[in-house]
Length: 115
Length: 111
Image 1 (cartoon, chains in turn green, orange):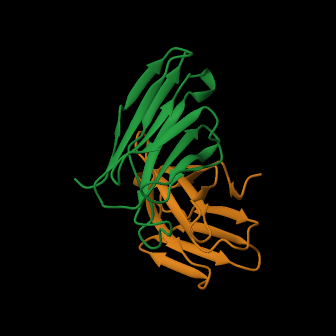
Image 2 (cartoon, rainbow over the protein chains, first blue to last red; image 1 turned 90 degrees about the vertical axis):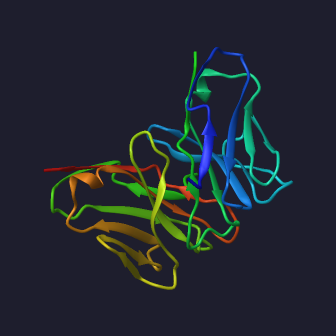
C-alpha cells in the first residue's frame, strides 16, 4: 500500500545512547516532516525538508539531526538520547509545501522510551 | 507561543449528539486550515480542510465553520457515532510553511 513507512515501531534506549529513526514514502512527494507527539502538547515540528537536498529546523530541533537521503527517505537521529525525548515520533510527507487539498500523509509512528 | 489554540481538551457526547471543537489563531497570514483525526496507535489522517475564502465546508457528517474576522474555526460532527471516538487536531499554515497543530481534543462518543 502506498504511504509513509516508519521503522522501528517501538524502541527503548538508555540515556546517552544514539539511534536513527527511519522514514520512507512511495508517493513521490517533495516535502517531508518529523513531528513529535506528547500528551497534552499536540504535534510539534522537529525538522522538515521542503525538497530533496534541503532541511530546516522546526519548533523543537534541539537534540536532533536529520538527513534527507534522497527523495523517498528522511531520517531523524538522536545523538545522545535524554529522557525528555521520550515521545511518539511521526514522519509525514506532502506533495509540496502547500498541502491543499490532499494534506499531509503520516506514518504510523515510532514510540520511543528513553530510560 | 502557541499559534493555534484548541478547545476543549476532551469531550464526551452521547451517540447522535453534535460535538463541536473550536480553534483560534492569531496569524492572519494563515491560509489553510485542516482538521486531522487520529485513532489510538495510528498516525493522524486528514479529515477535512478549508481555505479562508469560504465560511463553511461540509463533507459527509463533518463540517468546518470558519470566521475570518474572529480568527476562529470549528469542527462539527453531525449524528456522532462511537466510531468517531478519536483525537482531533486542528492545524494551520501560511504559504509553504509547515503545518502548526493545536494540542488536540480527545472525543468519546458513548452509546
